[in-house]
Image 1 (cartoon, rainbow, N blue to C red):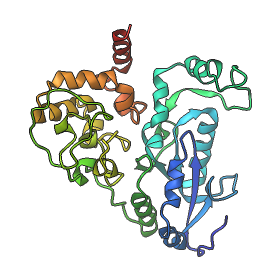
Image 2 (image 1 turned 180 degrees about the horizontal axis):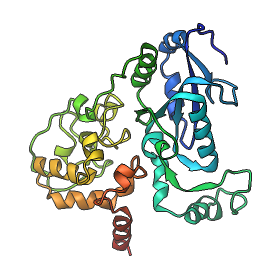
Image 3 (image 1 turned 90 degrees about the horizontal axis):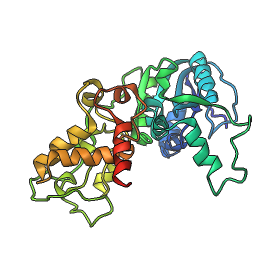
Image 4 (image 1 turned 90 degrees about the vertical axis):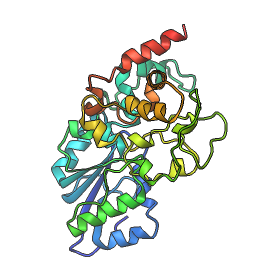
Length: 316
């Protein structure tokens, strides 16, 4: 598809690395606003919109997905060469995202699970040369190329995508703030006598009361708002898809589990240590979007392999 943008339009290249493709769907979710974008932006390359296979020179490059394969690395480097500005677009590009869970498993484990021991796989053998080889580990985009702007979210809400694109056209900084998901949540925090942690599928939460007050582990207070808070607003706990707050990312001794435990223990009768242990037991869920970024993975407080080993030992 080629759009009919004016000659002075900001040229944009878009690339899709190891991710689910949801960030690209967010462009379509702009609905009629995409027409306003296309009046000022010329999308030259986009896997879901254009047939362009190369990397023409562009003012802006939007790159979604983590670096998981050699092909990802090559594509990221080509985008960096062809684009004046690079935006890490979505939590996979910014932090490693869900793909980042691969850092706690060897390539052999992954291949054995996906191919060798998978009942839905016909060959039960490793992929052939037609599949790009894995990198040694999962990497966020900025571990391979320089990044100029970060736009986390899984995917970022279309409102943030729209504002980021228009901001580039207008030469200003996007309006994204450092506020948390809690900042838009209308549930009220209150002290309760709840004395145990509840699973997300247990019971029907009070729609007016904070999830933490009810014993549900919600990550809204430790997560950047890049979503407009749809999950807690509609009765679902926040899973942290937009990544941790800057306070947690930049301060070595602050961590997701301890920040949530502090708040939850104040709002309920659940001991702080019990909350910490539960989040450690389910660490692959609670750190699923951010564990591949060095800002989390290299913290002295982040011991996910130990937590997983401890959790497995309780089931033996």
